[in-house]
Image (cartoon, rainbow, N blue to C red; front, side):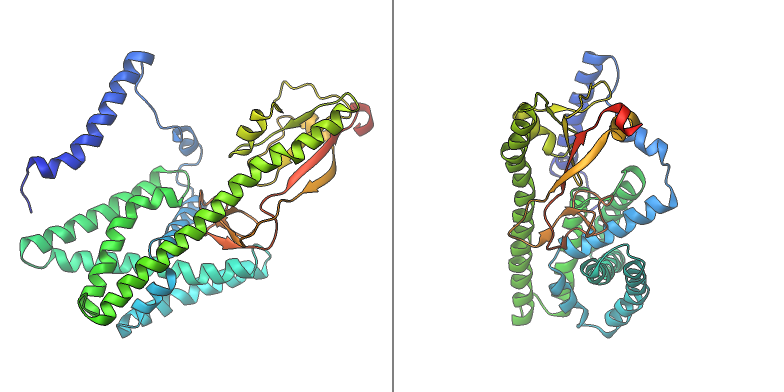
Length: 359
């Protein structure tokens, strides 16, 4: 409303003062200001075209699949013919691109369908947000104009932050985008269906219920993935350790993203460049949990002997590059979630051979 007051400034002042306090403490404790952990990564890949494209696709599929339930968004298309035309215009090249990726073997059918559905919906949400924001900016009274300015600035700042400053797109990075997008969705329902009308009320209720249900399903899939790591460390890994110990050997592992925590809690040692591998030792490398072999010499001595794949009750996947699920980062996949009947992960078990045998 172009007026400053304590109430208006407070939402900005509180987090800024918290960060300023942390910055002062960090400066006093270390002699330097805090830095963002991804800055070295960004300097390595300064806005490469492929990275920007990956982040943009991850952003729009995240919006299309995670803000409001996709089928509810599809219902909104049938209120104006121009929206259907724009959606079809956006869908055609994206669908062709998704199908071509499937034909070249980059992904399967589930990922193709979800990309062709969610990416155009995410673009439609951005289209609606910017057009509705601009429309309100040009309207009077000043309150509606201020709403338009707020939405336009909010969307633009968060999108630039995700695409330019962050190393990849992620649903958690998109959380600041959700409030203005949901606000715009409510505006659309009010303007096109009438929030007080039966159809408007039903759509808002449906949006809340099915989006909440979808969120719970994603949360369950996340829990299953996390718990499978704990169960592997407590069961299969312990059995493998006992098997190795019977011949005087030990079990090593290399991983991140939860697996390391549970493996270390069971007393297992992480494989590093300084680790001395003995013939007959076992090494566990999860396929999806960030495993890596520190040195070429270590890798040359590993012989695959087993592949352990934990099952799941739910076919929903949130972090799995095999089906394009990249809820925690678009580097795993371009979708916020996907579907699969395969195991939650693949724990590759290797036996260490003698250096002379591999040479």
